[in-house]
Image 1 (cartoon, one colour):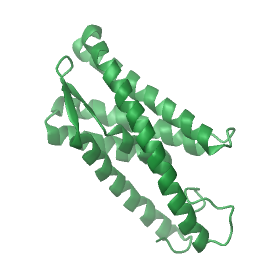
Image 2: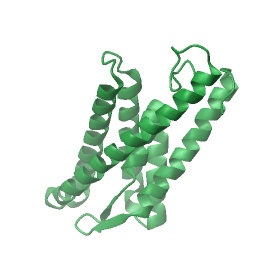
Image 3: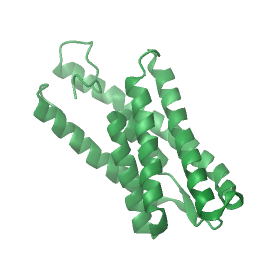
Image 4: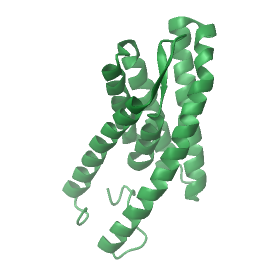
Length: 191
């Protein structure tokens, strides 16, 4: 996988992971799309990819989340949502990644994971509520809130399970490559 700790390998690894997570987010967003006529939007599975991107890449995950979701909007014909999706999903990934990677007062990974996913979820639901209120009025925008809550809750569960699985595999890989047990695979010191 990643050999050594030099900057080139770390950068290559992160860029490859960014590209993979962007594509994954696009596919997850497109694979199930349930239209919401009141706001001309749709419910999808893409939040799993957005949240996973934030957890794996830190704030950089906002690029994968925003770009992947916006590409899906384009491919599915929701052109009017592209800029909103790019910003809201991008912020969702940035907030999730920042809290998970930077918020060190909470040492237990499970609690950081919970708070990061919760904060990212709040950003998504409130971001679309604000944007759709400006576009269609509050009465139409509030119709989509329960669907967005369901969508981001499902995405949080899938994202957390996927992260914990990937984390376990990467820890084993990096433990074999690094004799020191104090280096975590997603630590900025390694990547």
